[in-house]
Image 1 (cartoon, rainbow, N blue to C red):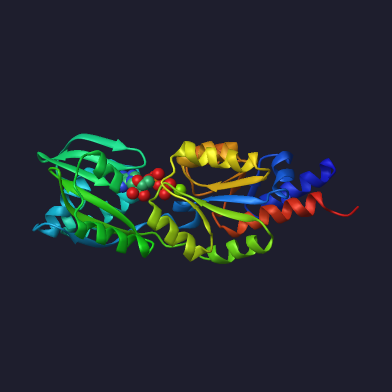
Image 2 (image 1 turned 60 degrees about the horizontal axis):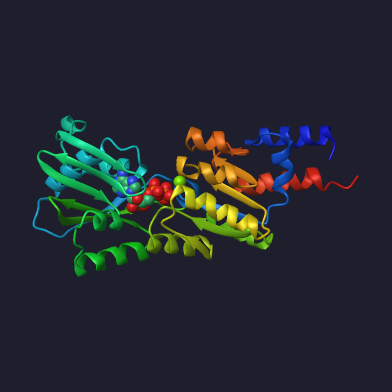
Length: 298
Ligand code: ADP
Ligand code: MG
């Protein structure tokens, strides 16, 4: 393609909300034969909501929510925000923003949070966080976890004073059109892969719903990037689509990193292409634009 064609392609992209950072990104996009998608905030809306709570011990739900929200209120994680919103529903109008006093708040990336709330040790997060803290998981609790996960919801466990007391089920629905985008990519003979920090059960349920058959769950940020490199080593030209700080190493490693516009600044910085409208359809827009720019018959 001529420099003019590249300029035109980049301009057309910009007018459609697909920000392409330079000719190299535009050129690479049409060679992509494999796309790795992050889950939360990329395939899903990233606006999780708590849909139910199961208490395992005799405890008042409102009191439980107060402790959990207090532990989560200092976390930036979307799941934490969902939990705080949920807890507000159990309160009166005038007391919505002040939570019980918190000491020793600790955020464990990819796992959850720990805090001392009014002298009680509260741990909120995934199963491995509980296991790492030697908190036993009963058979009843295991059953709740697998039920929750097989319905594509994320189960968040809560322990108080080293005893598992409840499980929150959190739902984060797919973005509209997600299934269609995956099926179009498959028909373009582009392989799709889901990679997420979320647990195995939820990851597989979401993948099934959206039509992706290769899943990597419980992935740390460095695993996401390693997976991209592994695919490249087996001769794939890889695009990574993501929104989080977690995704930035993989966005950098990919042949084409695509960031969701509504994502974090660090992801947007790391990407070659930014999907300003945060639509998944624009993954295809970017590839089409590259194809029409570099495969134009002259
Ligand atoms: P993703 O790749 O899906 O964005 P993360 O790596 O951020 O996921 O988190 C992985 C898992 O760790 C979450 O699915 C959740 O179970 C747990 N987790 C992380 N942060 C929190 C938090 N603040 N509160 C509760 N659980 C959390
Ligand atoms: Mg994400």
